[in-house]
Image (tube, rainbow, N blue to C red; front, side):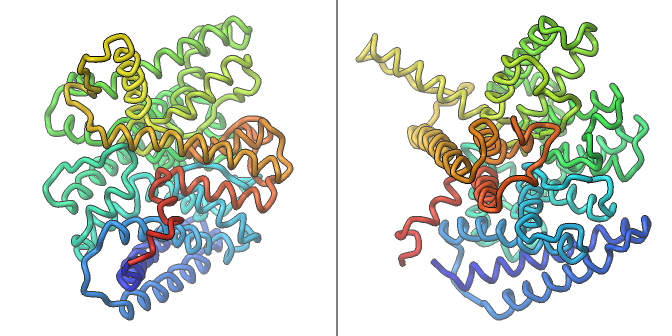
Length: 482
């Protein structure tokens, strides 16, 4: 592996992060929260380290797949380390482990938090929390491909390593153009949601922070009670809609903005499955919550059930109700949704709807072949046959996901956490959701998790965001050999 080239590009990414660390400064000055020196110092440190790496690590070789995996994985680690500086330098979080946990949770759009009194935090730090979501949602690597021409060489290796889903589709021949278009759609949806939330009574600060967290499917809120603090059916409806849109493949949004009608969405098989799961799970929660006496009015039942289904399925993690008070069967349904996640090519986490759909179709084909051994039947997604290599990758991903979940759950139990809380914490971080069950439920946080447990969960967040392969491939000795 070309270590010099890897360090040079990591330096360039740190320079980008230094620019992002300056964005909370206007909020610090406006609210006079006193946190501006922490952001300015953090930005200077990032700029200094990034500049040293960029200018002293020079290489004439092109980027290969190995460098792409290494840059993305170590890049996310750098973002968590240097992005934690404002929390530490401002004194808002005193523990380095807690600060890294909060930052990794932000950049990976997980939404798990160790903060107990969010509303007492300086507004500029709350904006930084939301901004880490927004940057991590579409991917800082993809952003860098859009704004740094020097990364055009070998850029597809970074794109493939970072973009979530079974395949990474180009919208344009040049990877920079693809990244720019994706970020354009992302920015447009963010602006629209911010405007709609302000129409519902939110101030600009709350509106933009919640729009960042929604479109990134992150879930960091500016309030201790999350979205429930606003107690508005209109705000719940707007956030539900944009959480659903954030869970859709962004290439579909781009095609729709080019003038395609809404039928274009429904022609996509993965979208139909995603919509079907959302409606079916909502119907189940409506029935069980009504039967359990949780909500007697249909409108109220629909409002909270649909919001929670969309929040968990898209791995956003916002909350308007304590679902641990709901019937146990509804909690099981929500846990199943945690594993599924959003569509491929969305900002959502989880296994992804496309993978679940293809696993189901592959199982159907295997059963069909038992009855008709000589028959030839292909697995298709839409009208296109799926390559055998893609199916093998999906089967491998599913096996790794289950293996990592079981292993990490055992480690959390070894740290002293109970079975429900430990397992729920792992799936919540591995699928980038945030809230789980037990002591890490929707009204709790992760402050009580032991230090070793927090380290395990940070690694789960990273693996979940980069979809396992990108991270785990670095542990093979052959990866580092020439």
